[in-house]
Length: 234
Image (cartoon, rainbow, N blue to C red; front, side):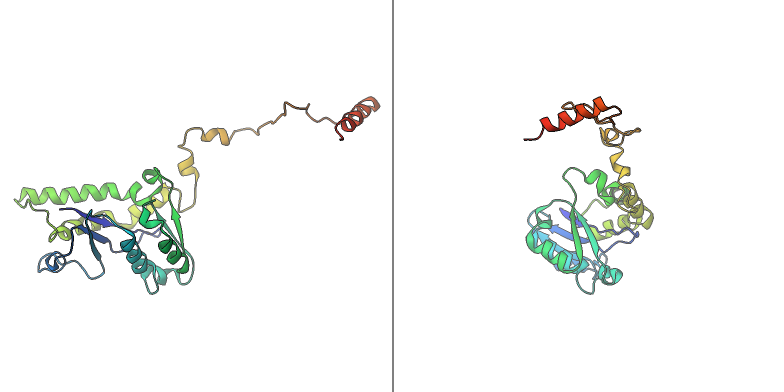
């Protein structure tokens, strides 16, 4: 069948309508508008040969969800917003980043191989999302409905979204990653060697090139320091 749903969540627990991308060379009207499984108007729908996003769709996404008049723009009310994303090429091309900055959106690309611990939806939403989606499919199978097609994809996806994309899960993801409320130790404490950068007692740094500094107490010690200083003058 080949369909991809891109979700967007906010630290306040809210979420946007998804962007659905069908794996195809075009879109049939029956996939989007039919009597039983019509996709709502607010949902973005596109297609691509591999079922994934690309530069064009990424631009459509950011204009729709972060452009003038969007829900996030109204919520921000002129303040800066931050958009977290992975390193897919469609997210880091110049037009995408430039448009984000023009709309007072700070684009932040998460480091490679960190989505499992830094992407809030990956941490707290997608696991129950997948579970609910699987349950939807299983329930259909039990009643003899074995077809997962493009024209009924939304009817399977939407109940899973409603069950998984709840404020409690979304807020939990931002909290567990230390993004909001800001708490980097939520992640750093689990990284090997992190304790070595936060010792329980202050580090005592001694140079191997010269003796530790001491306060001279006698005339002899003062004279020794004077000679030492003069010997280092070019």
